[in-house]
Image 1 (tube, each protein chain N blue to C red):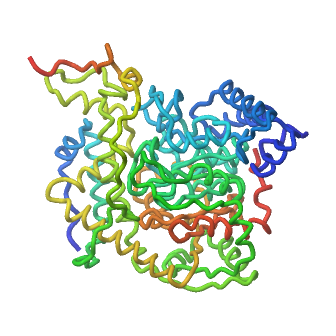
Image 2 (spheres, each protein chain N blue to C red; image 1 turned 30 degrees about the vertical axis):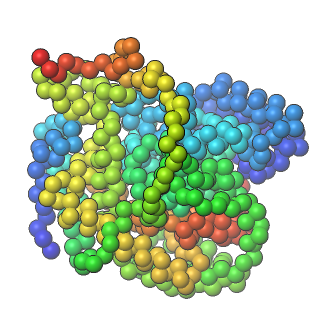
Image 3 (cartoon, rainbow over the protein chains, first blue to last red; image 1 turned 90 degrees about the horizontal axis):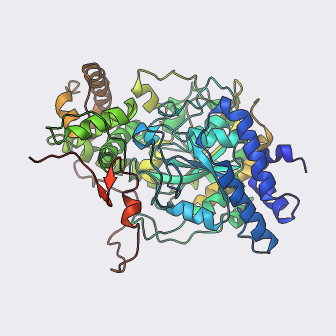
Length: 491
Length: 96
């Protein structure tokens, strides 16, 4: 086998090679480790990794397979993990100084499930601190580069998860998406990323940012790869009371069964009006033409409250974050300041948090505290929750006429590093196409659909609640006649 | 449109339990005021009879068996504390 290139193969292909014993998981894992060592000085996707631990998992996988006890399609496949998910006995930093020394005492539910699928847990991937950001520049650990152009951002907050898959440093990876944090970096790095329906995947063991918006989801080089990873992490969990008790379809089968279906797609008028001059539009429009050419129907739809989504999001998300991040107190499991006013019982919190949190986290905690504070709750938080209802209803109305919506994932390809610094609002507005899906709780998939100036651009497919099978099938339809999965960054 | 709101940054920082330098206070209050100015556009919408959404797909009455299970042992739960002794968090003395 050409072991040197194993790291760029898709999980579907690797799964076949493993099952036919043409390669071993140890060989594959070595290939991914070797690639990571060769390029991560440039890409800086990983906060940390444990080579020996990964190889031991790979050896276990090979032993299982040799006994005829393979655990399925993911058995032996390396999966990179965003540094926001708890893996027992591994660091969990959220790319924050405040958790710099934290080691998880338990496994997140999605991690338990991945372990049961036999995958090789590989490394801790960089992110914006506490998942707050769209560029991974808010990491206290390091600055991740976009593998396609290293001086550009990889997107965020799951920037490490997207960059690692794009650069061959992992086969697939897990991220989390609160306002676009899987889909936007997937789009910027030329990989596939899926945000599941709110409640599809358990949040137990995901360090909370905004609990009513957060979802864990897969990134991969193909739709099939993300489908297999989604399969393994989905389902109800007694440890997350917001996880849904609904059946999980077989996504791989669904992709096959739904092939050739003549879908009806909606183009949200507001997205295309406001975006007529954005750089991403060319490849997205070509993708829409493709769906027309295979007999799908394209309709214009309206989401009248689109203009209010970013404002709504930044109230809901920061309010929930200010509450969730109150747990980082310098007492129980986080960084504690050395010096504080010992006569003031509260000062240890103030100083520990001042030292432990970065700028964006402070800004959001302050904003969230303000909008929840006495006298402002009705004007901001309650108002935003009501606007959220209007945004959710917009989607319900639209989905009466169409099966899914097609949009750009992001207004532009990856921008240069540092372009947002000093103006947080400009970064917030770059999430315009992804944020509404979190507010409405619907699933969204980003699929590579072309390039602008040498940088990848993603097509976003937004589906009905719990219809991940449909958007995966739609994405696969596009992917199967476009060859983006075999195009790799010039590293 | 209402005027851009003024933030009492000392009060907010105290509620948020974050010590801010003078420089941070100036920077954050101007940034937050500009974000709040943008957020003000929600007031264009009449939401009088609209129900608030707390969760996108609301679930009601999630029950489980009231049965004790073995979760983290204490020594594991305090393992990450900045200071700990005999399975307890060590904190500065706050009462005389």
